[in-house]
Length: 228
Image (cartoon, rainbow, N blue to C red; front, side, top):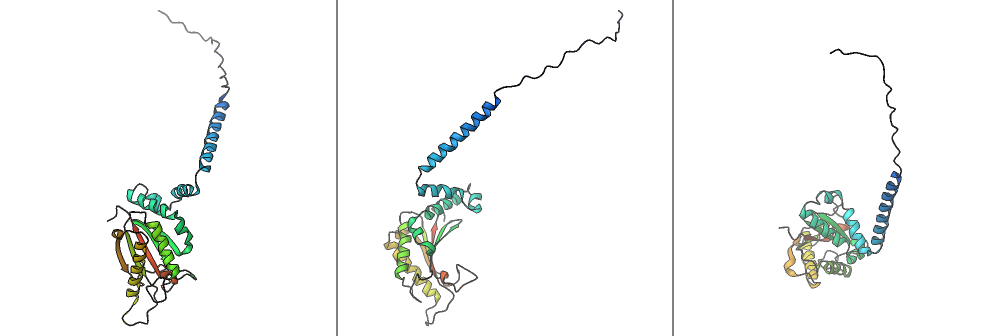
């Protein structure tokens, strides 16, 4: 069988112009309206939340990087929750600069410190001033409902005492025990007190300024329920 060849070209079909898909903008607009409605719904829900609850929510999002990095750790998460709870205490807020809250891996520390015009203790004495008693009582009111163990530490500044046989070690121990007694009378259960210690001037709040008034303080360590 023979095969014939030809050079004729058949007319090709013209390419079809793709049809325009009408109405796609409507889909995008509908998505936008849905997102907008969700936003307004969220704003409406937040507007009905109490200031304390809003502060608690904000605290969740404003945690420092160290807390956020440890969020997957149950112990660190409990410490962060405890810190947020104490931060919301109106009683502690009212104390202003006399209370310093700090987050630690195994708990939260409340430092009750001397401030200008509000000394915590009588000069060179373990006795609390009226302002000091008010401050420790405020801490007791906040801590009494909790079940967490506590450690009570007494601290002094670096000034030496003029009394023979009575150093900053004795002074800080007397101050710690004075605070312990007031905490217990304020509702903190005695079995929760894990330890009471006087640390003299060995752990200044401001290491570069060991004679600073703030170093004269009571430090309350609130331990986590799971900590040893």
